[in-house]
Length: 211
Image (cartoon, rainbow, N blue to C red; front, top):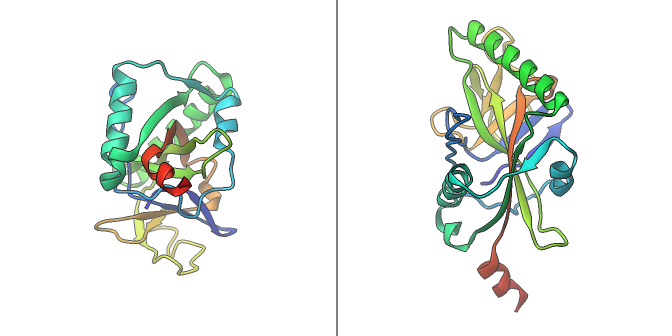
């Protein structure tokens, strides 16, 4: 299932959807993810505004753009043939606020790595998806997430704190093949870093729905 931020309660935020790759190189921007249904339980956030707030810039078509687009569509499984990527925005690293957030994220990543014996367990996950907007576009926000040591948190469990602050930093519905990650709300401002906003359409599917 595609990711979106879902407030389970005031202390637990869950990301539905598998990770988008265990690591993402700034140069290659490698992204993988599981087959998704992007419009199920969409986020109330206006992601188009997210791209216009000065924190992201639209990418020009090129090798990096094509790599991200190809991996995004191929990772959508049976839906891939129906997807048309219209635009990709990435974080604007020249923005002072973005630079500060990147530095903060780096510090927390290094701290988590020290805590976990060298591996901060950083994932790329689909944090928010949106319904079709007035322009006919849908949007997905990809974030880098510091997971650290994960414990199993079944979907709908209502758990709002780690079972042990010393042993666990986050959660997943299945530790072997996760489809949903859980980040406690206390870490939302420090353990997430928005990376890409992908805008796309489902022309063939939506054409059938409009008939």
